[in-house]
Structures are given as C-alpha cells and as structure tokens.
Length: 177
Image 1 (cartoon, rainbow, N blue to C red):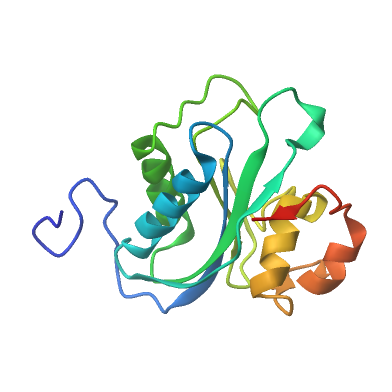
Image 2 (image 1 turned 90 degrees about the horizontal axis):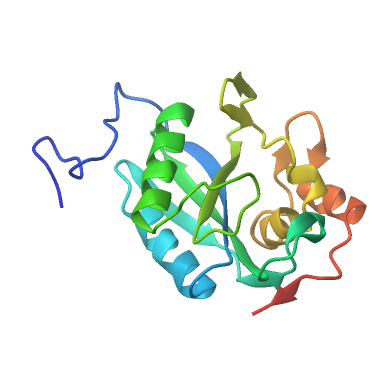
C-alpha cells in the first residue's frame, strides 16, 4: 500500500535526493518454508521505495554456522540499486523481517528471515548497530558463495575482490537448490 507522498504505509521515509548506490543484501532463513521466506523477502526488497532489485543469486542450502543444533538454512544474496541511506535501509530490512515473523529470542536463534546489508557501495560504516561491510561476511561461505555468483568482481573495502575472498572459506556444505 502506498501512503500519501508515494511511500508505502509504515515505511521509513527517504530523505533528500541521494545518488543511486549499489548494495548487496544477504538473506537467510531456517524456519517455516525457508525458500518461500527468501522469495517473499526478495519481492519485498524489490518493492522498497527508490530501490530496484538488480540481481539475485540462486538459493543455497547449508548447515547453520558454528555447529549449532538447528535446522539447515537457505541463503541467497540480492543486488539492489537504491537511494535509501544505509541506516534507513537497515530500518527497512528490519521491517521486512518483522513482517515475516522474525523474533529475536537470543543470538543466532533459528529465524524465519534474516536480512543483512553486506555491502553498500564502497562505503565503510561503523555506527552503533550498523557495520558495513558486514563484519563476519569474510568468514561466511553462505554469504560469499551467492555473492560471488552474482558479483565476483565486486571489491569488499579493505579486503579485496569477492572471487578471491571466496578461496579463503570452506564452501563444502553449500548446496545450490
């Protein structure tokens, strides 16, 4: 639904006239029907104001990070072009998560949906509650594998090209769906 002024009802307002920025969003789910949750989240990303879904990776099934005893995850990465600033984008992602039943019981709990900004242009952001590039993306095959599928040449500020970074993680548990 759109509210007056062209925004969706309940959405975070977009302020000013920013340039388009390419951002990459990691998506994950391991509750309910994870693949359906991811596809629904991709549609929600495409519906954000002043945002266009450019590409999306395949879906990948993989075990939970850290050997936790919980259901396997389905993960993907989306490439968007947006005028929404990083903090506003995070707010939008949290709204999408809540809309799909995300509850934050405890750290690393099973979840219906997890959305993380992994890259926002070439910006480095170090704010309370928001760190870009995502602080653990370089350790996570479930981020680097789908990211490398859609953007192998993208550079992670301070770290290098995604295709090169992928060589440093164990991706053996990743299964393309």
